[in-house]
Structure formats: structure tokens, C-alpha cells
Length: 554
Image (cartoon, rainbow, N blue to C red; front, top):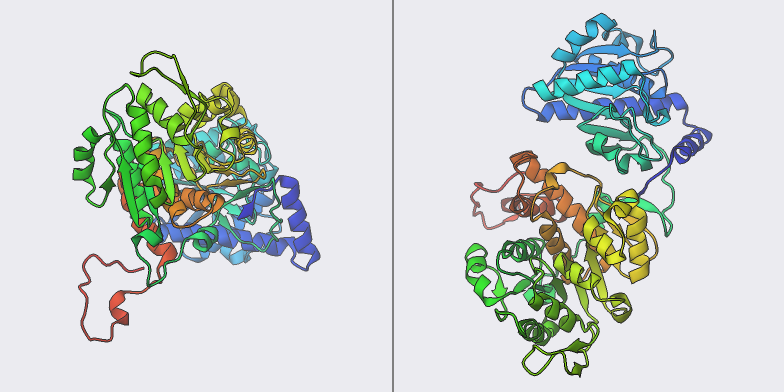
């Protein structure tokens, strides 16, 4: 995990590095070289191999980082052009003069042509010293850069943070550089992960330049890393079996919503759950079974009066065989769903007559749920209508996965209140309920009861597609079933699902992303995190060669 830092903490880390013997010039040299390496890496994997870079340079250290990067790329044969704002000469930057001399400095009159020809445009104007107000000249240049991106697919890269955002508060000028990629230097900056600034960062690539990492104490906000996911992933013993690996019972589904439980169940299978059973109304089973052969089913009654209670009783009877319950995908807002949630979780007291119509006699609620559950979608909406449910479920181990509207209902506030302070209210919910809360907004976050907040490293608008939340709930439930505690299951889940989404976008594109594409990308992500990077035939001693088709190099 990497603690999100304010500007003062970044400055302090730089001062500490200098005190340990690393000069500011060396830090700038490392930063510029790292930016050049990332851009060259992108060029090596992108169609057409872009070789023309336009650097937008400012007067401070961020501009110095950009100049160092320009020099390194020029030394590698790139055609590098530099447009500078309030900077008439390079100044004292740690890059070979002959390399920098290969770069062409532009006048304002030459800028328009350079913008129309560049393959990559790099923003190195303000960095963390900038604020959320841009000078008119710089704002106009960024607008022209965005126009080039729309018209020609030009890649926009920001150095450290996009110019025009506040690195502490997340405020942003509406003309801020709208980067496709931000090469963040040394430490993650708090404001870049907050709205509206997160609209301008694109993907974030954090690179090490030798700054010490601040400690992560309870109450910190931190970004999850690949190392966290690798460390938390469950391990399988050679003599295990499907029930020992972990089983998930998914409870949900309603007429018109059978896709949600199927997506969640498929995702749970794909992240390694040994067995996944769907407890859905029996009328939904044929369509779901035809789409996913590996699922098993617990047929629940169709109908209205009393169906929810009978559904709950079936689930309660089966639950001891399952390590994790996933409640809510596609559950709906009809009466059976309310009965199901209340009877299954043992909330409050249910009142009904002998035929289920009149409210004439009081019945004690069933035994309260004390197991391990992921609660999503309408499972959350019914919780929100159940009074102080968290007092009744203190002994349960829950992961709640709301979007802002669902969190607003759980806390009894307006949605706009959540959007004004999503992190603070997610933490408030986790502390109030005594459970882990996964908020699906911006950088998806895991709020822990101790006040710690863990963030997904990336955010992408392609996730604004039906079913992606069901996939995330299934991923988290599948990991929980394999023995991960709530923080680790939720943290690993948002990391893996996010990486799978990016892998799917690389194939399908942002606008065409479907939730099922994310499930299809999960194996590649998990293989990279879990499996050693070899081809199986390299380890065979029998001399039999496996077919190479369908087996990709790692």
C-alpha cells in the first residue's frame, strides 16, 4: 500500500532524501528518466510506434523534469519539440547539453503545427506547485492539445500531476490538462485521486525516484498495489478439493434481473471459488444454466405471498455448507425480496396472518445471521429500510458494496451529501456499522472500521456499464470464500477487478466494455499475479510436447 500524501509531505520526503545525500538534481534526473522510460515503453507497444513528442514546459521543477525527459528521448532518436511558458532557456537541469540541443524550441507561432503533428504531448507545466486556476495562454494550449487528441488520437501524458489541479484538495480548472496517462513521481498525491481532479489524470503510473514511504496508520488513505494483491491472494495446496477451496452461495434474481446473479456467480467462479450455487427463483434457472454450465442451483419458490420466507428457509438450511453468502444481485424491490432479506438475516419481527395477508399476530424473527456475507444492490436497499440493522448484525462478518445512492440510503442522507465527501462518509459508514464498506465511486474504495481507506489504483469511465458492480461483488465473494478476511478480500477484489477491466478495455475499448468482458479478462490477470511465468511443457520430463495454440507467453 502507498499512503496518499499532501504536498507538504512530498516536500518533506524530498528534504529527507537530500539529508540522506541525494541531491535535488539527482531526484530531477531520476524523475525525467522515468518519464522518458514510460513514454518509450508506450511507444514500443502502440501501433505506429510514435516518435514525435511535444513537451509543454513550465518555469519550475516540473518543467525541469520534462526537459530531462525530452533530452533522454532525443538521445534515443525521438523528434522532440519544446514549448515553454515563462521559461526562456533550459536553466540548470541534470541532462547532457548535447542531448537537450537535439530538441527544437518552439515559438508561439510554431506551436499550432507542432500540436497537429505530435504523437505524444507531455504536460510538464506546473506539477504539485500548481493550483486549480490556469493562465489563459496555458488553458488555450491544453484545449488545443485536447482537440488534437480528439481528432488524431494523440496521447496526452502528464508529468507528476496534470497542470490545473490542486494536489491537496482535488479542485480542478475546467481547462486542466486532460491526460490519458499521469506518470506520478515518487509518492501518490492526495488531490489527484479526488473528484473533480480524477477526471484529468487518466491512468496513473506511479514510479519510484527514491523517496521514503510514509507509514500507514489507522485512519490513513492508501492506494493498493500489485504487491498487496499478490500477498493476499489465497494459496492452494496440492491435496485440496472444491469444498475446501471455498464455496459461495449467491442469493438474488428476479424476473427481468436474472443477468445480475449470473454475472456475480461467474465472477466468483473465475477468481477461484471451488463451487458456486445460485439460490434464485426456479423460473430463472433454465436461462442461467444455459449460459454457465459450471454453476449449481438451489431452486427458490416463485410467487409473492410467503415466497420470501420459504426462500430464506431454503437458504438457511443450505448455508452451513458454504463459506460465504452473496446477497442482493438482481434481487428486486418486490415483497418476496423484503421477506427474504429480513428472514434470512434475522432482522426485526415479522407480522403476518395465517394466510400471509392480515397483520394480526407477531412472530419472533429467525435466528440472526452470524456468518460471512457480501451484500450488494437491493440487498443493501432492503437493509436501509430495516432500522438499526447493524446493531442486530454485530456478530456477522459483512462486506457492503454500495454505489453512492445505496450508501446515501444506508446513512439516511441525500446523494449529493455523499458526492461532497465520498471518502469521509464511506469511513463513517464503516465505523457506524462496524463492517467493511466498498464504495463504487471514482477510485473504488474499501473503508475499514478502524478508519483506514484503501483505494483502487485506477479509475476508468468504461466501468459505467450495467453489471460491472455485480462482477465486483462476485469477485469479492469468491475471494472471501477462499479464506480472505474482509479487508483483504475487498482490497484484492477491487484491485483484480480493476486490472481485468483495463485488460478488457485494451481489447474492446472504453465505449464497448461489457461486464462479461471483465469476467473474460480475469484469468489473464490472475495468471500474472499467481502463476509462475513459464510454459508448462518446459517442465515436462516425459518428452511429450503440449500444443502451443492458446497458451500465451508471459
